[in-house]
Image (cartoon, rainbow, N blue to C red):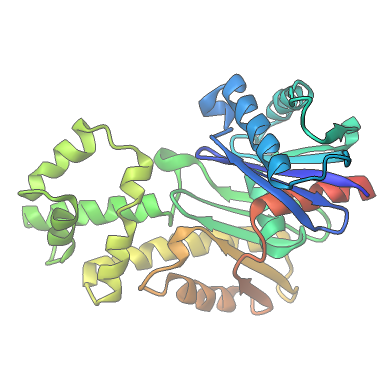
Length: 321
């Protein structure tokens, strides 16, 4: 029996799953972040190593069994250039797994697959490698691949340069609208009162202290997006406008990927991934309607599997090829 590791490494956590050649998940482990661009190489290596060890331990392998690991795929945030792949290959080659684990590594260089986290999100979401993944959570990015193996990435340039249609994008627009209403520059919006209540502020001016002096980062700000979503779902005109604008930007990014990869009559799937797709403002339903006008034969779906499973599928595919 052949066994593989599939690893999803991001800026928040690292997930590893252990599967056999029949796609059966035997173990799953999690550890800290492994984006080497932000965490450094040693920290990334430690997280990957710990996630692998925890996946093996969770499999509860019998004492007399020793699994032979023949392939590994790592889909990591921050991996976008050939130099990044070289660095991660070095990390994989120097993993020091404890000798007490019931696994034997027999991985040829060609069976080490290193790619972006977007690629494994697409494969995990659809169950195969053809289609488009529209990821909208804290940040946003659109990634697709066609039947000829051509890929297209749109967005994903971070909270300063991009992330259109993301939770951060929506939250910032909501905060700005609340302050504009407070100034008298914006029509009425319930967002001012809702942010003030949610954050326990005496007045809206205290937003300055919360956002700047407390050192709030992207995740803390993006976490306010559901407040805008709920207000929009309840009919707040300003909040509805914010959701509409975010959706328009994300739809345009998706359209750009569609036109680059697929013909007008081609059938393919678009998987929506991330926390923005839930909520009360029908973000996903409205996106689906917009896409149907652009690509009538495209089907918008929810993820079938997690990204780490997509990584395992790519590892198994490397063995077959």
